Image (tube, rainbow over all chains, first blue to last red; front, side, top):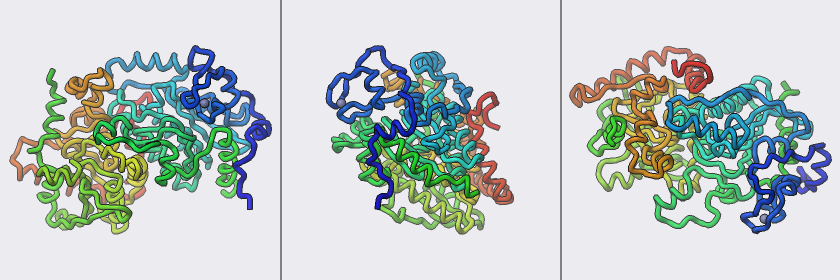
Length: 287
Length: 266
Ligand SMILES: [Zn+2]
């Protein structure tokens, strides 16, 4: 019995979905990227045509817009809460300057983008965290946008697909940022209690306060291969315990082995998997 | 440089300061300790059970650092493992079932940092508590009695009322950790403590907690009594609220933290 066939050829899937080639928003000035796994150098445009995956299977980091444009049906993404801006609630020294440089590096206003989209015709709410904005750290703006998205999804009986990448809570906003963990978790809980579906996709790296909140709260949690996912930082653990870390510690594979991830899904297969899971969990017609 | 904020951090961490167990023994007429998470182990860093507070049975969940060196080792110096958070949640769900209010006492530098803690899902355990506490169908009061270190403290602080003792601290990151990230110099912890706004007074002024409990202005016994009666009176008020209203207010309290273009807190 074929349940759903995750072994579909990714290229066919690409054509079926009608996606365009993703816009190349280069995050570095060099025209080639060297793979840390196989050391091969690949032109950025060629990588972009292959979902930012090296021929050896290594998944390069990806900015949030690129990720969404790779995944969703062409032209279907409608951004929500784009105006939410950062705040400096404890007047942290140097924070305003840090934000300005993050904005110019990432061309984004904050560490996550949210909206609605279709994946192979399946409507959903979607968020993608932004690695080039202070490593997707969660301050009040990120917390507010994610909370608002879950509230929107609850109101409209929609599923949520969330791509996490984060260094954790954003230190520069003090306790305000820590409490975003509670705030987002509350909104996820209400969404869940309404019988609605939340799919988390863990990408490299997902750590700290995001791991200890909405990243681990999905009904189904999938992860990209070899992504770093954990709560405490590996180096901190090594220094504190003075023990050698086991091989593959805090990778997606490690998490799956220990029972915290449902499946590891490589980037070319994600669209198919996500479309199927959205279809299975669509609640709107039954309402 | 020495700062007032860092003095508070030192006081909060001081070995001579009462620990959660001291509060438990002074505040509750009876305390029956309940062990284990029913899944893996009994984490000594989390002490929980049923207490009688002025004739009212309540569930108590606390993070305990321990006293003697031996006890402190056994309690991982108050740094809970995932099973500590799962024990806490088990007891809170039990409280919900039997309609007992929950009182959490928090004193931790943070969740345990180790290989085993990661293998057993430290992040997942904390996340689960945050979700479940938000909709726990019984009143919850959390009191920071010493250190409140990051997510490991928040995991017991999604409550209807969050209070801090005057010399308790509550922070997203330790001052040492902040200093080493910010200035690559952990000896600048004192400066970091100042900018993090981690004192009880800061948290109150920022509208992130509901009450600061004074200490030191009266004797030890009188101080325990003060906290005891604050809890009794507050629970009386919370128990009168219809459940829907209680849960909606709890949600909104956290919901409005950091909302744009609005004043912080209430
Ligand atoms: Zn490669």
